[in-house]
Image (cartoon, rainbow, N blue to C red):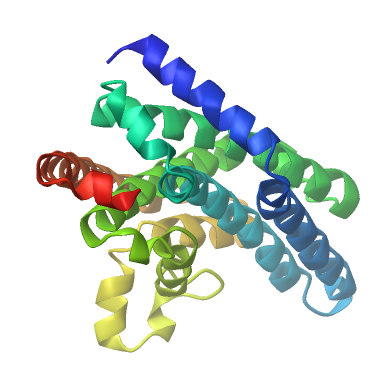
Length: 260
C-alpha cells in the first residue's frame, strides 16, 4: 500500500466532512444529544432504579460509538458514489485496501473524538465514575466496539458494491438490526431459542453483556470478552475476504463504474 495515496484520500475525507454541515449534525449533534437525554433519564430514575438508568446510559454510549465508527466508513464511500468522485479516485490507480484504509483511519479519528466527548459528558454531568474507576475495562470495551464496528463496515461496503448503489441505505440502517439482535439492554435469554443462536453470533452481543456486567457488578468476565473478540476476528476475516473478492470482480465487470 502507498501511504501517500492513503494520506491524500484521508485529507479529502476531512475536507468533505468540514464542508458538509449535515455530517456535523449526523456525527456530533445526535450522539451528544442522545447521551444528554439518557443521562437526564438516569438522574430521574436514580431513586427508583439507579442501576437500570445507568445501564441504559452506558449502553447508549457504546451504541453511538459503534454507529459513528461503522457509518463513517460507509457514508464516505456513499459520498464517492453520489458525487461521482469515485471514478476520479479509481483513475489514480488506488488499490482496494488503500481506499478502505483511508476510510477506516478517518472513522477511527472521528469516532474516537466523539467517544471522548460522550465519556466526558457522562463523567462530569452525570457522575458516571466507572469511566475513571474502571478505565481499563472501558478502554477494552471501546477497542472491541471499534474493532467490531469497522469489521461490520467492511462487510457492508462489500454488500453495497455487490448489490449496487440502490442499497446504499445499508450504510445507516443495517446496524440497527445488528444492535437489536445483540440484546443491548437485556440478556440473550429473553429471545426465543432460535433467535438466541443468531444473537450469540452478533459482534456486539458480548460487548453489551460485558457493559451491563460492568455497571451492575463492577467487573467484566474475561470469557465474555474473549468470546466477543473471537467473533469479531471472524467477522473481520470474512469481511476483508468478501470485500477483496467483490471489489476485484466489480472492477473487472465495470460494477464500480456503475456505482457512480
